[in-house]
Amino acid sequence: MMESSNEAINVASNHEQTSHKKEEILTGSSYHDGGGYSNLTSGADSAENEREINPDLEEGGALPIRAEKSGRRRGRHPNFAYGTAPTTAEQGDLLPSETDEDDIFQETERLLSHDRRGFEVSGHHITSPSKSSSNQTLIHLIKGNLGTGILAMPDALKNSGLLTGCCLLPIIALICVHCMHLLIWTTNELQARLQCSSLTFAMVGEAAFAYGPRRLRFLSKFAHTSLNSFLVITQLGFCCVYIVFIATNIKQVVDVLSPGAVWDLHAYIAIVSLPILALSMVKTLTKLYYPSLASNVLILVGLVLILTYLLHDLPNAEDRKQFSSWEDLPLFLSTSIYAFEGIGVVLPLQRNMQNPEDLGGINGVLNTAMVLVTCLYIGMGFYGYLKYGDLVQGSITLNLPREEPLAMSISVIFVVAIFLTYALMLYVPVELTWPHLVAKFSRYTRRKNAIYVFRALLVLVTLIFASIVPHIGLFISLVGAMASSTLALIFPPLLHSLTFYDTISCLSLTKNMLIMVFGVVCFVTGSYYSLAAIIRALQHPTGGNIPL
Image 1 (cartoon, rainbow, N blue to C red):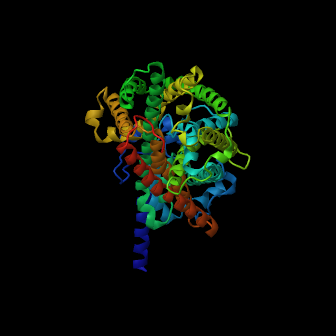
Image 2 (image 1 turned 90 degrees about the vertical axis):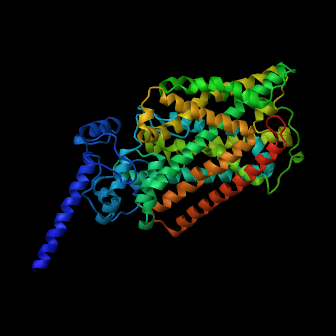
């Protein structure tokens, strides 16, 4: 009896110490995540700072985690499929057991303590404090998926064949859109378990592993780092594509206006580096709003003008290849995934919606936007390849009649539009990497001009890679294979399977695994054939962008 009493006292003492530790973490008075991160502020300052950037923070600085509750989680509750908060009774079923809480408590605290800023950045969209209507979200989704990718669709169909490409594009679109829905479902479930209203893509990845099978929970921090790394690689890849696009189109216009010009593409990349560097020094997002708005208008006008060329004097469809070759098919897949890689805009847009539940559903905003985008992609690819055949280049703007003023004006329109977007694309890698540099190298990053030096270095990196591989189509295929396939096809089904590992059906798990296998195949084959094509292009340069 005495031993039983002492054991009970020890258990009670341990539970009291654990509860006290959890209370300290929740209030921010003592925090170290054990994974290399530590709070730069503490105590009242930390709580005050957290309240400023986290509206879900309760009075007293406590994060809104109901740590005292326990119970077996029951999977995604139907009442919050698209952002609806669960009731108090439902919350108990969503939280993990008491043993699970002890294992992942510091993970959940770190998830809610890091990566919260005044503006949420992911992919092509930056959220703002104001809420967007469903119609505004529809426009944002369409814009988030339209860019240099749509101009490369004719080149994509060249690598697949006319009939093959038109059949595969809707299938790829269906898979990518389904992965967007998987990410939304996973995010809503994890936000309900963590009792918060905002998670970034990387935080969703970390939370999915933290709440997943025990044997994989040690990978939670690695998942967070990996997702951020792929986001940085993707955005820097976009920046490289933009530089090559701008320089190539400027070279084409100058060659027409000054036939005696003998500069190669590298010279134009060096010239455009100066205005790009100047625009990249803009740190305030409000100052980038109007350039982004102007870019949207210019892209819309440019696409309409391009279609007027493509729909004139079309040849017979039988004159084009219906299937290209198995060797070129991975390049088609990579370019298509690059074009559909708008998954980064989904979570920020959902958080900004007045009615988040309107995003999902068969007739929801997401499906409506992606149907329109898919139709635009198929139309641009079909008519572009039908018009120019195997002569189509990495950007359809390079195939327009060079001597016609309207064609030259289209090139200028897209040059200005893409130039105005570059700084916005650079903002994402800056925001994801700069805080870590500040934490590790505070001695140097405290200097006033340190952030400008860092931005200049990132611009220099994109300029170097653009100079090494000055081929639009090849660069798009490489970025799509290495980065976009990972973010759009591999991580969403993986995180969904981990989050619902104890309730997911065999059919859903098999479907998720097939999507992941498809993503891995696109990653491996697309990267291999893209790099092989780049090597061939570098060995036999033709002065600019070459047909693949």
